[in-house]
Every structure is written in C-alpha cells, then in structure tokens.
Length: 171
Image (cartoon, rainbow, N blue to C red; front, side, top):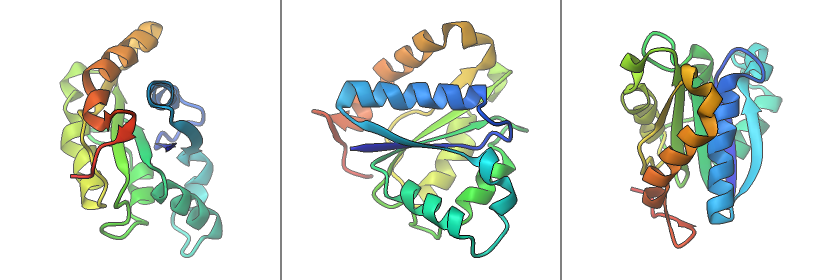
C-alpha cells in the first residue's frame, strides 16, 4: 500500500507539510503502508500553468496511482490555496478514482475547522477519490503538541479508512 502526500502551501517545507507527513507516517506505521512520496507544490509553482508539462505529468501520475493520498493546505479565506486548486485542476473528473484521500488543512483560527469538509473534501470527491474519514483541521497554535493532535485524529478516524490493514472499499 502506497501513501503519497501533496502539499499546497506556497512556502517550501512548511509546517503544513510537517503535519501532512505526520498523518502519512501514522498511516504507514499503523497499517504497513509505505510513505512513498511528498509533493511540495511550491517546487512546481512555475509549471502549474504550462500545458503540457512533462514534470507535472509525472507527478500527477504518481499522485493518481497512490493507494492513500494525504492532501494538505493551509486555510486561506476559509478554503484551500490556489496553488493546490491549480494542481487539482489538472485532473479530469474521476481522475483520482480508486484513491483514498485524507484532507488535511492547517489554520490559525478555530472558526475554519470545517474547511476540510466544506472546501477540500468536495473537490476530492468530484475527482473520484474516496474520502471515508473526517479530515484533519490542525490549529497552528498546537505545533508544540502536533504528535498528540495527529495521534488523537488517527485514533478517531483511521479505523474508518482501513479494515484489517487494508483500504476500505471506495464509496
């Protein structure tokens, strides 16, 4: 089972990436998955509006072939970043069919806690991914206890995604 992380933070090696990789590592350690790849979209910003683009085509293919995809973004204006939207727009409807997606969003205000469910999950579902668990909204003020926050989310949600160490059937 292969896990891939996509991070839509315009800042390279961001705290959002750190949280997304914690989630991917929890999946890997709990269910024998392999965290295979992290795509930091800040490294591809100049390529996103070039059609076609060989480098992004390879990345898009690797993402679409993941078993589990952790999709992460900071919360901007109550939603995910334009950087992430531009990347996801490269896929046709159904382009992520067969992929289990885990939405992860970071933010500074608890009032945005529903952003993963209201903004990121719908686009992942439109692209054909299965989103069987509640996404993680991570408050940046919790960075000093990030492991505990991610562990708590994992305990509450990963049994919805995996059964006996195998991905659940797509919705």
